[in-house]
Image 1 (spheres, rainbow, N blue to C red):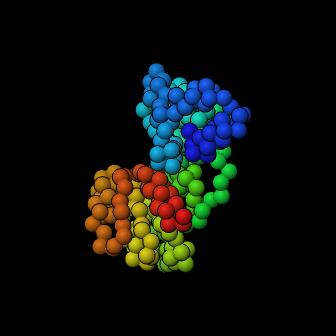
Image 2 (cartoon, one colour; image 1 turned 60 degrees about the vertical axis):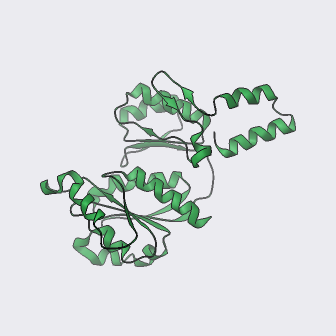
Image 3 (cartoon, helix red, strand yellow; image 1 turned 90 degrees about the horizontal axis):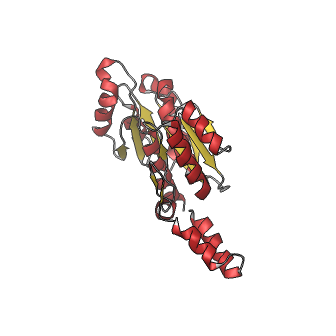
Amino acid sequence: MSEARLRALLCAVRDGDADIDDALARLRQLPFESLEHATLDHHRQLRQGFPEVIFCQGKTAGQVAAIAERLAARSDVVLGTRATPEQFAAAQSRVPSLQWNELAAAFWLDRSERPLVPGVVVISAGTSDLPVAEEARLTATLMGSRVESICDVGVAGLHRVLHHLPTIQEASVLVVAAGMEGALPSVVAGLTQAPVIAVPTSVGYGASFGGLAALLGMLNSCANGVTVVNIDNGFGAGYSAGLINQRTRA
């Protein structure tokens, strides 16, 4: 349950539009809800400002659909990451308003109708990094940020990222996704006062070791202000960027 929904319920009780027993019944499932295969944390949005997210990888289509249905009943925002088309189809059969983002391999729903706050910039070093960058963009957007995307500006053509210098320097927080040697976050961090969240991707030839080379390169960045998330963790980067932007622009 979101803060807005809880406030509306309390106002309804105050104004006599809802009785106390009805309010108690709705509040009993506020902390969590137990399903056969999952325990849903409905209190998370009140605690952290964003509802529980469905990590779809490893779950059956039926499990994903059941979780999505219960989350959508109690939240204005639903996000499922690492989803397959089959999982999305099953979830949409229960929640028809769900939408699909093929590039991010994610489904989502947003009924919040809030204005988006500018400040987040998501940069991808190459086109192959776009799925991870798009997962970050979608996550930050659902958290209430208006996100600008800059694509295919890796260090092999440094002039490409310099072309976007005004956008980079106006950002409150940047997410930079890169594979291969993972150099781009260091370059970006050297151009801005804003924090940079680096996302190593599993893009590259054999010696990149599935993103490990990029991860180590980012962890050893000589530029200040670089924080690193796990390999291919666009969701984690987008979530952190959304939190920072909320605080910065408040």
